Amino acid sequence: MNKLSTMLANMFSAEKLRKSAQDRVFSLFVLGACLRFLSKIPLPCIDYSLLPTSNRPCFLALGILPLVQASLLVQVFNSVKPKSEDDDFDKYQKIQKQVKIVSACIAVLISIAQVKTLSPVMYSYTLMSKFILGTTLITGGLVLIWISEWVSESFSISGSVVVLTFTSVIDDVIRLVLEASNLDNKPRIILCLYVLAVAAFTTFISKSTVEFPILSSKQSYSEQSKPSLLPFAINPGAVMGLVSAESLLRIIQSGLNQVTFLSINSTLIGVFISLLRFVFIITFSYYCSKLQVDSDKVSKELITMNMTILRKSPGQETQNYLEDELKRTYLSAGLMLALLVGISDILDNYYPTIGLKSNLSSLLILFGTMLDLEDRLFDLGLKKA
Image (cartoon, one colour):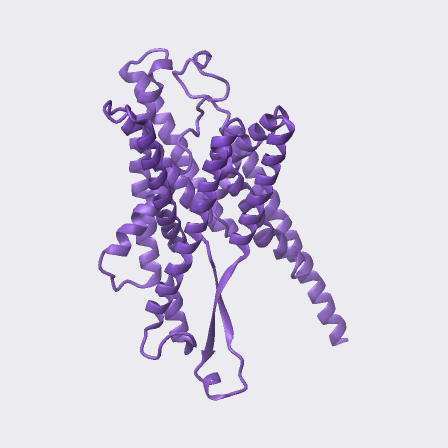
């Protein structure tokens, strides 16, 4: 009788988990449909007949980049300032408040630049029309920031990546498929191989982990005790480092183009931008990964549970050891990502019609989002069942 009760309880529990996972997936796709609708709302005061069909800004034109850039800036600021004595919750709340304030400031600055860029296609470049257009852009950016934070809290996945997927990545992938249908056989085969390579790279960098063997103080006295493994993803920042690097490079490139004496030597500018891209991708990939993992919090939890990392030196602090090892891991993942971008640049020079470099981040985000959904949503209901 007890066995029967246990079996029925497990069945109902598994069914509840499966239904919960299905509800979360359904809610996520409903949100995606809403984002797709918002991404089609036109901006006020813009004469869209003067713009090509492939480049028409919408209500969500600012995208999620203000939040990504603000998160990076706050992370860098908090990493260089002296550490406070606040507990983890208070520190988290302060960081989130800082991110929101900086995001709003960046959204305002980007909207001002967008209004200036769109001035040639505005019906009238008056103060009122500029204010309406700028306010609309800022509102769209803040809506995306709120949605991204809600997704992160509700679904335990990267809200920024989900928002990017539904607002821009899907359009980029559809455009890439349409362009591929018009290619000759050789470029089409190269594109297919490239997409497979990107998918394999995304799977590897999403699934791979670095593991630290740990033992409790009681287990350390027993020779037969096997250590447990403390896993960390090698690239928890996913592709946000690449997205941040590309957005900053576009700003730098537009600034360099305004300097007339540098525009004479386009090759020199190209080499300079390529080197900057390489450095930015590695740096931003590291800080985006640090945003996802708090080594200080992990080390405190290990100390509270009387757990010891076996690989570290006897006199070395757990936090310092974790920070050093994770720093190497995240920088290595950023280096792999930068090398993939370099290969894309080389292939793009030989086959510019495919647009490998411009579509790389979209492909990485698409495959990464699919893997994330599989791990965090579908497996929740299927594996435990």
